[in-house]
Image 1: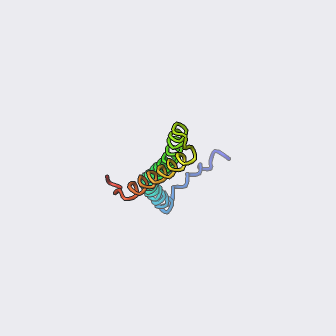
Image 2: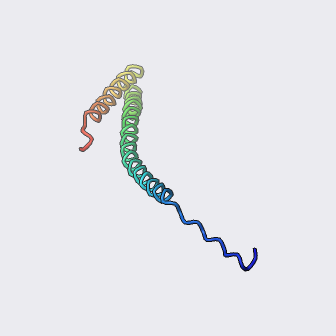
Image 3: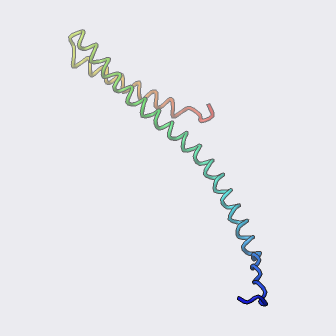
Amino acid sequence: MSDDEPAREPIEEDARIDALEARLAAAQQREEQRNRRQSSGADANYRSGNRVLADLLGGILGGTVIGYAIGYFTGTNPWGLLVGLFLGIVVAFRNIIRAANKRPDE
């Protein structure tokens, strides 16, 4: 470049680029709000599923252990185990049904 040539002026941004950037920022903001709302619902569903699983496993395992212990000490081992297992299943399903019938706002 010679000294007598003027330096090139930087090209100014086009109005379309400004509009595109504004639309992109608005879309990102809407996406963040939507993800925030969905994540809270997913967390509640995840907790609810974990509670159902814990009720089911706790009832079955608890009934089995208590039934086995009662059968062991009374000498009626297979029947004590079966009765305890049956009662544990009944209690587990009762807890699951109660949790399913509960309103989410409670």
